[in-house]
Structure formats: C-alpha cells, structure tokens
Length: 457
Ligand SMILES: *[C@@H]1O[C@H](CO)[C@@H](O)[C@H](O)[C@H]1NC(C)=O
Ligand SMILES: *[C@@H]1O[C@H](CO)[C@@H](O)[C@H](O)[C@H]1NC(C)=O
Image 1 (cartoon, rainbow, N blue to C red):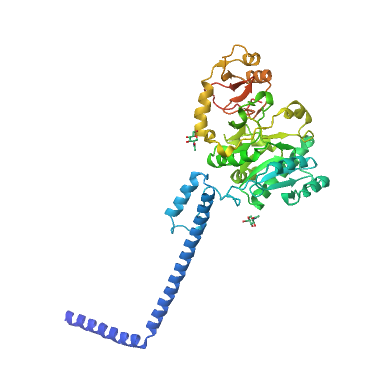
Image 2 (image 1 turned 90 degrees about the vertical axis):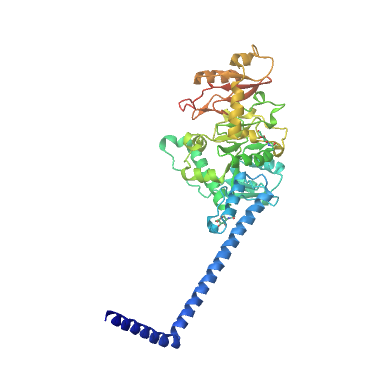
C-alpha cells in the first residue's frame, strides 16, 4: 500500500516534470534567458580579460620605465633591483596603483643622471649676480642642474638682475610679503621669521610644484668650488643608500686654511652629526617629513634638535665647496669678520665619480673611523699647539671629558667652540677632526661615549 502510494507520487512527479519540460523547453523562453545569461557572462568575461590585460600592460609599462631608469643609471641603489624583482614575482597579483618602488622615481636628465635642482635663496642683494655667475660658470649640464632662484623681499633691482639671466635660471617670487607673526620679545629677530617662511614656501615649490626628488640649497652670498657639482651629484648616491645620512653639505665649519689638509685633503669627506648648512642637499623624503612641522623661525637650529635629526648625519668635506662672501645679512657681520671669511674654498677639483665613497656608509665608517681614532696616541692640546712632546709623524688624539675641557682645547687651537643641541661643530660621535701644523688631530671624548649632552652649549 505504502509503496503503491509512493509509486503514484513518483509517477505524478515524473509526469509533471515531463509536462513542465515539454512546455518550457519547447517554447524556448528559458533557453533565450539562458543564452542571454551566457552572453552576459561572456561579455563580463571579456571585460574582465580586457581589464586584466590593461592592468598587465600598465604593470609592464611601470617595469619598462624602471628598467630603463636602472639601465641609464646603473649606480641606483640595489634596493630598487629588489623592488623590481618583487614586482616581477607578483605580476598579475598586483594592481598597477600598488606598484610603488621604495625610493620615489627620480627625475633623470637626457643623459640618464638624476636631476638635482639648485635652489638659490635671494632677497635684496644685487650681489646675487656673483653667486649666479659662479653657479653658471661651473655647471656641467643645465638639464641635470636646473637653477631656480627664489626671491623674497620683492626688491625690484634684485629682481631685474635675476631676470637678466633669462632662461638660464628660473625666477620665482615669494608671494607672501605680509608682516610675519612675531612674539613681542623677538621683534628684533623678525628677519629670521621671514627667512623661515620663505624656506618653507620655496621648498614646497621645489617638491610640490616642480616635482623634484632632491634639491641643493644655496644662499645668494655663496661662491662655489669648481667641483661643487661633482661633489653633490656623486654623494647623492649616499643620500639614497644610507638612511642614517640625511643631508650632504658643502661646508666645513672649521675649514680655515690653517685647519685643513691643503695638500692631500681635497678628496676627504666625513660624516658629521652637526648640520652645517651653507650649500646642502636633501631628498624629497626628508622634506615630506619636515614640512608639516617646519618652524616659524630659526629653522637651522631647529633642524639640529634631536627630534628632527634623529641621530642622522650629514656628509661634509675636509675643504669647503662653498664660501660666503656676504657680509651684510641677517646674521651679524662680526661673525663674518672673525670667522667666515677665513674658510678655505677648494681649488683642487676632484672628480668624485671616480672615487669609492662607500667608506662613508655608517656600518663601514663606524667600524673603521671610530676604531682608528681610538687607536691613536693621546696628547694634549698644548702639545699640539706647541708642536712639542708629539710622535714624529702621524695622527694624534686629544681627549676631552667635560664641556670646559673641550672649550679650552678648541680656543687654544682656533676651532669653533660652540655647541648646538649638545653637538660640537663638525662633531661625529663627539669626535672633531682637523689638521694642525701638518698633522691630523682628533679631538675626542671617552671611547665609551654615551651620546651628546643637550646641556652643553
Ligand atoms: C607635478 O605634479 C602635479 C601632481 O601630480 C602635476 O599636477 C603637475 O603638473 C606636476 N608639475 C610638473 C612641473 O611636472
Ligand atoms: C669600495 O670600498 C669598499 C670598502 O670601503 C669595498 O668593499 C668595495 O669593494 C669597493 N668598491 C669598489 C667598486 O671598488
């Protein structure tokens, strides 16, 4: 009985299905729907394929561009090769907009060299002519080293002089000539507030309007050395390779002729914890970091504070590649007469591109330089000054343990005696290197040095 009923149900279902099929399939509407569906999914598939191919094409375009860049610039840091390898390994998995190389694509000139613009800060000194003449005289390639003069102060005579250089330089003018907001106690330092504002504006133009990836900054009162461009374009590589190097400077704060090695010293470079300024280069990455917190005034001492420096070093030469000829400026003329005008400008041009500068990378430098300094015989500042009690030849070390000991030693020897955020001028891990009466001398703290003391000033 049960089975009979079940059989009936099954038979009924089968019949219904048959009938349903006959009606439905013969009249075709479902087929139409199905084929439309198929057609729809085919279109969708083609679209997907299309977008996939275009995505692959974009990826390849990015790859070809970057390979081309590497080919033209074989000195590119190896990280980039790694990045490219990653891109290759992930081809198809990535969306093109996600393909970001760690180092932003550099601008390259026709000759395949990174474009390093020179930003000249100008205000109301017609003497900017002397600076521009020097920059143009030694410039090896206008395309690789475009000169951008940023003028503050709206001084018309100076503006005319800059314009007279025509297309050799790009002239931009700081539009904000309003009175800066200066706290009452600092009115006499208003000039520093204007300078800081101008720096921020001009660097913003360099990186956000001209889209450069690095910049060399000079002021209108600087002479440059014949190998100025070789120095910066070669050390640029260090700036990219070593994250503990945040700037390249052309300036030796203790670079008086009597304190540098004039016969052999032209190609010697150092790491320095002291930010020297006066002809210096940074990358856009650093500007991205500094711009949002750029100070209203005293920007250079602000850069020297630990919050900004973050234990990074600048590269500086034994013999300066810039020299200031300006006497009248915001900083006082006394400092110029006592000190700045004695800084030696290098006259023996070096082709830095032929030099191996990898000794300046932190891992190598800290091992070699620091160990070398602490293996030297120890003498006193008086010994050095009087050239008495010293080994016949070779480098020596003077030890200091306190701020006062440091100050009295440098006064005796004619070095600069100030500290900024606890760092002595040109100091690296507290070590100050100079040349004295034909001998290399290092003024150095204890070997177990623990870091700079912010109270030293
Ligand atoms: C710089 O980049 C911006 C944004 O990508 C672009 O609008 C501008 O045209 C670029 N400027 C130059 C000079 O390439
Ligand atoms: C550069 O010098 C380093 C040591 O400082 C050395 O390891 C490296 O092989 C040198 N490179 C070239 C290309 O000579």
